[in-house]
Length: 476
Image (cartoon, rainbow, N blue to C red; front, side, top):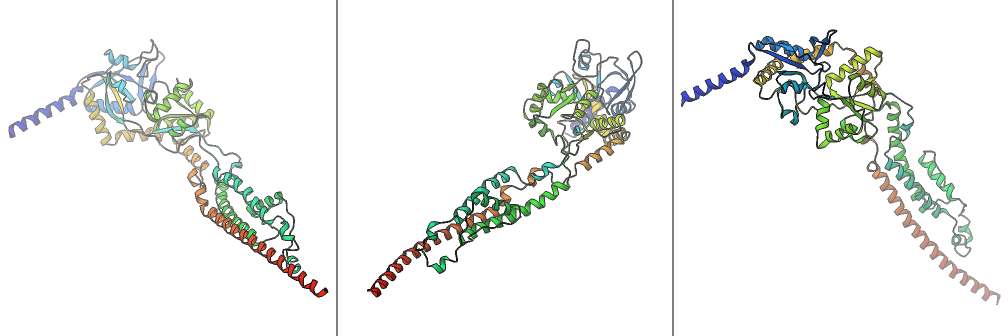
């Protein structure tokens, strides 16, 4: 049993060693998927590639020394995996026909690509980012309405005329209160009924809400409870409004175009732009469900959403209604290049980073003997921290990125960041409960006053009849 286990381990070790050392002494042909930061190519006057730069080039040179192989560059004008014309059939065509052994650069794995090629995964792990126009401040007129949600404003517009109508009904002159037969003259002389129009009552209600005070004639108990509950509710509303209004006025009103991909999907005024035929375009266009499916539909509905050149994408973003999706390193490079050319910060990043569905890989022919060698080589370089170091070094050459990102943060500094901070009807439930209680007490007092005055009228009428009988008897 022990000998069987030992033989199994020796055989497995030899198998792994043969996979890893499959590149030893070999010469391979590489294709180049050019992408900012990851891979740059330099061509001579005749169009031949004479130099490779970027993280992928550093990785290739390191693996060539580590695994003892040599390489040459496939001299074609193609830099995309999929073809776009007969003259540019795509790098996948050269892999399938044995003219290219591996395509270097940040290649995204998809089911359709898996069917025709293999992938050495683990070349790079990166988060995605949305490139947006630099947010700009504007006139802060909307700050007056921002502290409350729309439902609160509508509720105030509805409750004001209702309250005004209730107060007007309670204070309007009532003929039965002026009847000489209701009360004796000494009591009736103490009541002064002043005529007041419905508009004047509504204006006084509005003045209370504006914290300007108000006055109403004939302040009986019925009116006191309605007006008192309205004053208390208005105090809560005004205090909450003033406290939040300060935050909105002092904070910046520079709104970013979007905060995430989800915003792009639901906002019909914002368009997504990607590099035609590259990783993001392939993933988004090939999605069949979920958020990426919605974004893919958006790409297909706009003919400008797939840029042939990188600068074309950047120009669309700067136009104001487009956002560009790519890896974090690529978008940072775009900010730096634009600042160098314009000496202004025209671009920024959306606040929420986007996840990448899988690691970036290199593409090889189907059942290539080199796949495991490259995969293990990537693991060793990541373990040593070299790929991260090369990436940081590339980005360090673009120091203007930090300056523009800090500018974007300064412009967008706000104390209020989303609708969850705005006051809703739930926040005012206590004030509305007080108003309801005030209405109930007011109705109780109203019915009590009606009963009181009707009883007074009844007994007053009887007393007058008795008095008239006594006077007639005396005369007689």
